[in-house]
Structures are given as structure tokens and as C-alpha cells.
Amino acid sequence: MRRFIPRLLLLAVFGGGLLIWSQLRRPRDLKISLDLTGALPGEVKDLDVIVRRGGHALARHFVRYGAAGAPGTVEFVVFAAPGNAEVETTLAYREKPSRRSVARVKLSAEDAAKVSAQ
Image (cartoon, rainbow, N blue to C red; front, side, top):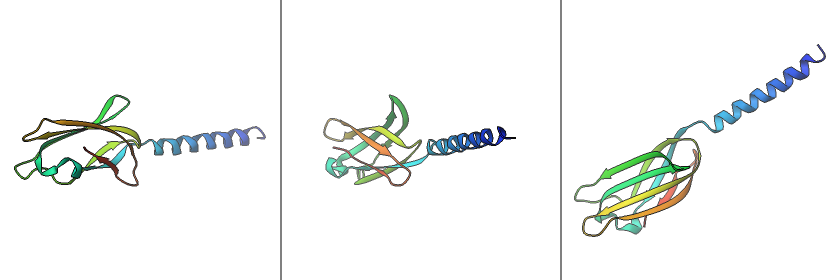
């Protein structure tokens, strides 16, 4: 009995730590807010956004806008675990060549990651 209680306590602490760690790494819906105001949003006809982590794609969002063009801010949801990610944005204009930009952001459940497309 004397050896049983410390072993049980160690097992409970280890199990609790694993439970907390698994909850922190659990995938969830994370928001990304893409600011297009610096890129003349009314002239953008296509928007292609790829979210990567460690060289692997987490999500891809492709949107084709009509004659009105893209809005000033675009928000979308990525189902992933919180942490650092790379956001690649390609803007296709009507009269100009496409522009590609890459930004590193920290995805968190508390607030939306803000990316500014240039």
C-alpha cells in the first residue's frame, strides 16, 4: 500500500498533463482577416490564399469577384491547431499582372490573425 499511492499519484499527474497538452494542440476553427485596402481592392478580380505550416498546406481559399471587385477586408476560417503559419496571397487584377505576397502569422483561438496584402 505504501508504494501504491505514490505510483497512483504519478500516474494521475502524467495523465492530467497529457490531457491538458492534447487540448492545447487540438484543431479548432481559427480566423484570418485579410486586409486588401493597400492593394486597391476594387480592381482585384481573383483572390487566392494558401495557408501553410511546415511546408504543408492547411487550407486554400480561391474567390472570384465580379465587376465590383473585392471588398476591403476578407475574413475566412481555417480548421487547424493554433501556432505559427505562413499565408501566401495572390491577387489577380483586371488590367495589371498578378501580385503574390507571403506573410507569417500566429493563429490563435482568441483573435483573428491579421494579414495585409500588398
